[in-house]
Length: 56
Image 1 (cartoon, one colour):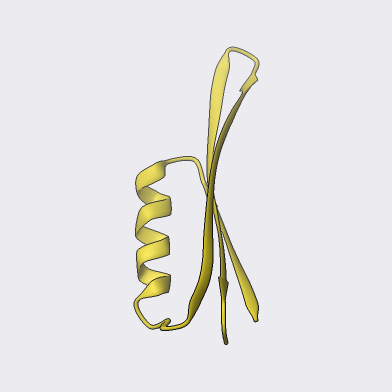
Image 2: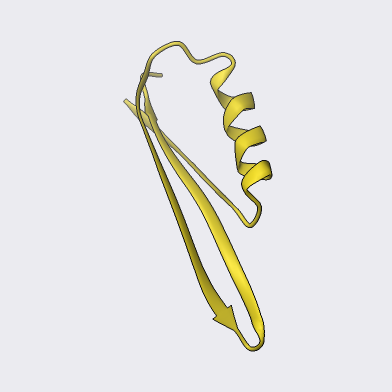
């Protein structure tokens, strides 16, 4: 079993990266998705993350 992690500030970037990764994988065990955000000064930072467990 292997693990692949993705983390992006924009959900569309995450979506594109995950879809590209999944194209040639046929034994996906589990996909977990998480969002979070925090403030840095006056700026809000968002994080869109995905963990994929797969057979490699």
